[in-house]
Image (tube, rainbow, N blue to C red; front, side, top):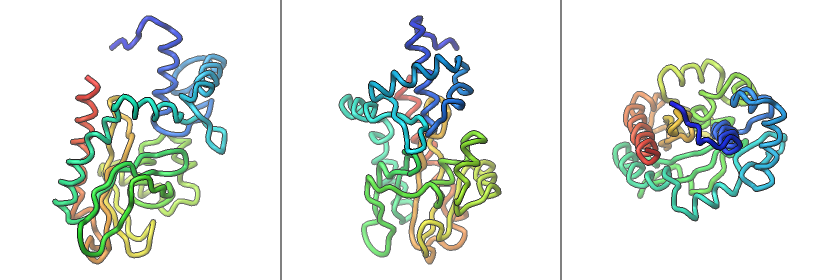
Amino acid sequence: MDNSSGVGVIDKAAHVLDALEAGPTTLAQLVAATGLARPTVHRLALALVHHRLVSRDIQGRFVLGSRLVELASAAGEDRLIASAGPVLMQLRDATGESAQIFRRQGDWRVCVASAERPIGLRDTIPVGTQLSMKAGSAAQILLAWEDHDRLLEGLQSARFTPTVLAGVRRRGWGQSLGEREPGVASVSAPVRGPSGRVIAAVSISGPIERLTRQPGRLHAEVVCNAGRILTEALRKNND
């Protein structure tokens, strides 16, 4: 399908923004992802930085900029968060555990929506909480489908291994036992944007005593179903 608008510079800028959807990206990675000439990509990226549509992280990599968040909020078009509430509440009620959605922002994963277990021992992660990309099943999901260079970079000092991420890709879900915090287990599944890229992770988390040492066996099916519902909602909203 031809996605060209007929306005070349806009199409090229859109290619750059699409390439950044998956996370922090070097100039070389942008060139590879867009298929555009290096000078063109560099010029477009710097222009987008000027307008805050793109930013740079502490390592100098390009990331989506804060202006996009401002525009999305102003237009009420953050479809993921708009769709999240009922899905997370159903997930919480089905599992009896707190449910969250995480997005990657630079070297962190950020909780953008949550539904807390109302009573009893629970893993409380308020909206806006920044957690490491080096531990936890949501971090596994957000890293597992990255390209080779990002994958190697993300695995440095991580609590999980390449074998774990290979299993995540094969099964379509991840689990963790005490990776992020002692005594806490979690199960996560991918949420994909209209382009098919993993843009978020939907998760449940709680004490290992309830989730057991094989939390995926108990809850992977319902967590994956929540991911599919959110993915479908994003696809419909993009039609």
